Image 1 (cartoon, rainbow, N blue to C red):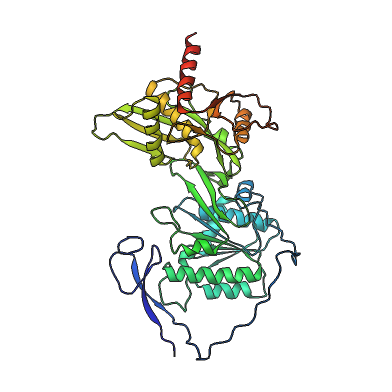
Image 2: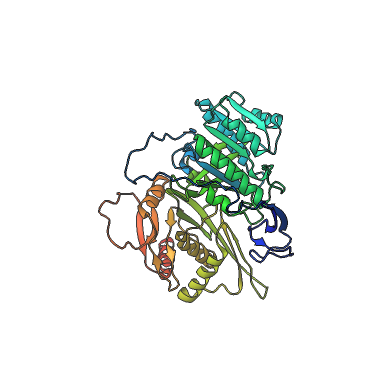
Length: 464
């Protein structure tokens, strides 16, 4: 007869240890190893069932039925998911506590219920009356959504597999509160999270249910639990934002049915999350004019162009090691850009504190922001403001060259739509004959020295 085993599993990375220790050898975290009971497999020859042959199909062929996505009519959410939710798919959404994950999913499930979809909302963190109170604040109490407060995965699966109601969409809030009663470990542990997600995804695939799962995050911003959880689902979304700003960014990091790195922009209001149809205009609405250290970046998030303000402040420092503070950008990349400017342009920052901020609470990760950051730093150090109608983008190499970035025409088109007249952009590798004729003056950059030349020409024009 098979006997159960006792393993010691790290709750941070999922590494299995033979005995308990204070520090995990996998992620080097302290006090994350707990004891869990794992049921052993049935030995061979002890009544194990024999497997059956699986039918195989050719890659070319017609689908048995056409897949129709569930459209929530929230344009920002539908954009991020690739045009709507696919039946039988599993979607995982993570974010900081209080950022608005439950509010977003409640609005989405109510919007789909109003369009005729059969939806259920299982909450492991709130009672039914608490969910109703939040729905009343959001003004969505008229939606036909079935609510339940449950934590037992066996009971949830029995409800979903019953013939009383066949659901199109199911929300699990959250996976860290769910448990399988056959697993001898507490809810939220690695074994419980993995087993609960596996059972829920299995029934969702078989019944054609779109499953939306809420996941907690750790202090590092990663989804809590085993990393295998993100591999099991079809789509992974992160809900980002700063408590000091009303804007929230819904970002795709994995999507089997659409593009990755797409973003949706929302604004947190009293009535819930409101879509922001033109985020560039919102991010630039409070920009001050004729201020040194301010540059406008023509960025690209997925397939969406976004214009944001990059602010830099350079101040004399009395410290032996000057400070380098960054908000919304990579600090290591800032150190690289500073080194390139000092080496290739001769502008010194070694005795100065450098502060960099991407206004609006958005985080930029693409290398096209290098040129805008360099222009903002040079402007702050030289105390010379950039033109108000100028946008900048381009990647900086270690030798000081400005490299080409993806879809420059889409960035320029967004800038022209918002009234910008000038652009500093990388030199095109080849002329695009189908490029749109935009009312924007381009100045091509080949190196960081060209940014210095632009400052000199701009200063001469102002003096004349």
